[in-house]
Image (cartoon, rainbow, N blue to C red; front, side, top):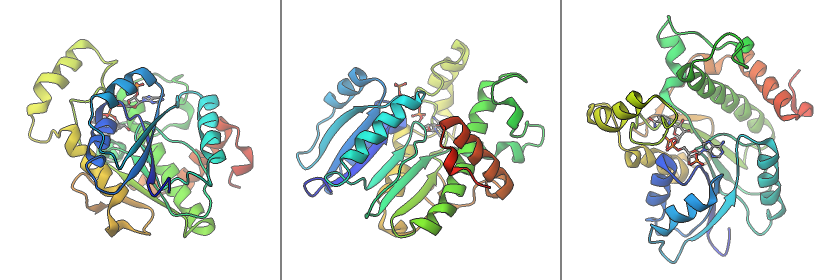
Length: 274
Ligand SMILES: NC(=O)c1ccc[n+]([C@@H]2O[C@H](COP(=O)([O-])OP(=O)(O)OC[C@H]3O[C@@H](n4cnc5c(N)ncnc54)[C@H](OP(=O)(O)O)[C@@H]3O)[C@@H](O)[C@H]2O)c1
């Protein structure tokens, strides 16, 4: 705790789902010390200034670019050096995933996933995960890579959960969530103009579309609900119900393969599984 406040690290907090989650969490009477881990500090300062932060909370903005291992390591190192004064209670991996280790406290880690991670098995004509196409040598398709990145995240999640159950059972709890389809966030910012227009004006009217605020309620539930206390490895759907993730994400051979690829890419070779 930080002066009685629970410490929450929230990645990608300056827009979309992350920002909506922040807006919901500051309404809690429980005092929080937020560490907003973002790559664009001025945009985040602006977004925070637009909010009225109740006095029980504290907000800190910290640089984290998840596309740079140097930045990830420096951010994690910064947290670890403050461990005794600032133990991490809740880690919301909204923008991407980071690796961290923890000491003597319960920490909840939220993986923001998507139901799209199931699509390769739900639609047999969709390409399945291909270890040989990591560098797009067999062709790049943005949505396909996005779906696969979410499946890889679920494989990582399930593998990490097994390892933590063995080593850190009482200390860390992992929860994965799907927030539902929220066309109004900035997720399609690099898409063609017609997709952006579709997302902005047409798809929000679809009956299955959700607002970022509705999506944020799932993250808030996963982060703070007492019902999930001391439970780990759960996948929570957009209705805040425990659900099954994709069949593939529970396959041990796939988990191991992609865990080891992550170790190779991050240089954490000593963490590789035999
Ligand atoms: N929108 C949907 O329908 C939907 C559905 C299911 C799951 N999700 C998941 O929800 C999460 C939030 O997405 P969103 O829809 O809210 O999109 P968004 O509005 O684009 O927000 C994404 C956030 O991630 C940050 N980010 C992206 N790349 C980063 C990097 N390399 N380093 C640090 N921060 C980075 C962005 O920061 P910058 O402003 O600096 O770019 C932004 O704050 C994602 O995990 C997404 O996969 C979304």
